[in-house]
Length: 59
Image (tube, rainbow, N blue to C red; front, side, top):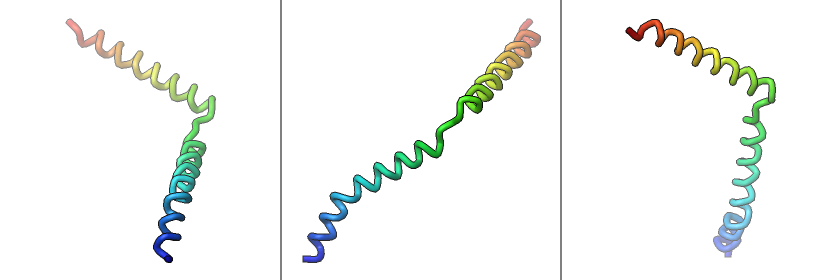
């Protein structure tokens, strides 16, 4: 039957295609070390700036 072979394809190939798609997405979204360091530095600077602003507002 044609329905059985299609169902077999979905059951076998479906998870394989899903895993390949997830791996592809994870590899494409990886950050490089210098990008990560730049992000961390910018975050530290923002926190430092916010702390300074908070200190000037606090009575």
